[in-house]
Length: 413
Ligand code: RNT
Ligand code: ZN
Image (cartoon, rainbow, N blue to C red; front, top):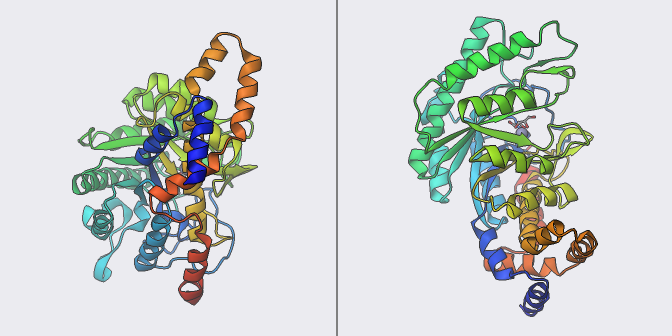
């Protein structure tokens, strides 16, 4: 408390209101991806993970069923401050008494237990159709496949998922963001780049032809640069996805692991905000490739947060986490990454951004540099701790997680 009071004064001298920052952070919602808990395995298929994404590591305690995943999520949520949403993949459908349904015929009832879970915790639910780890993915293709049976199967999956997202919105009372990402691409230089993209466009058109309430369901489209085994060509490239989102008035989604290594999402946010009412992000950490390492409190995460906050866009950007590390305790991975997104937002909220913009506009670049550097060593940690205190969340989370690991996780073999 004493330290917070002192930090509050220091920030006030810099022109920053820490109370306003804490209030804004409290309202910022993070959509927490369920797939960190079980290495993106899901419950509906025995297939190995595919689609050019990979989880590496063998840390004990991976969740093996809905009960375990829900218990792990509960512990993780209890250690995360702020407002959260649950982000599910279609592969996490829960089939009661052997009532199996394939991806093309999924129904809301297969997610009834997740709705119950979210309602009890006062959370909304976001959703993702799962276009990977399934026998109907043929030659790494789904919605862009030249095989009509394959393409149709996945179109049906997309339609089924929109209905499920609408069900989530109706049940929880919070809009549902449904994100489309397909892995489709080629390992080697293709002979035809247009054909697959034309088929992807046609498939998306078919999926989006079903009626849905646009005030309740936000459809987003995620682009990618390449995947493992799909290095030469990606159907859903950045240009394709941005153009498609514009053409259909849906929401573009940027995953910061999906660009060339020197390209940064932080520089792209402002452009997209100018032309879209809403935009969506997958916050991850790419180490040399789309490796999906846990988000840390690094420069690019801070820069992304600054772009959201400086442009007053906290209510226009859907922020979701997307990483999967199996080499460390999965619950700790969840909590660390989500807390770091929130820390980055707080760091951005503790900037005197109007003053800084003014310096830029008046060519005071020397002063701007000095102030930016000074902010880096301002007592940020004391404000973060105060936020945790007000949210009734302990700063220390590793002890509780280690205890759970000893009691619960090690028994999962
Ligand atoms: C893959 C995309 C996609 C997935 C999830 C599991 O590169 O980032 O968002 O990570 O759908
Ligand atoms: Zn992603």
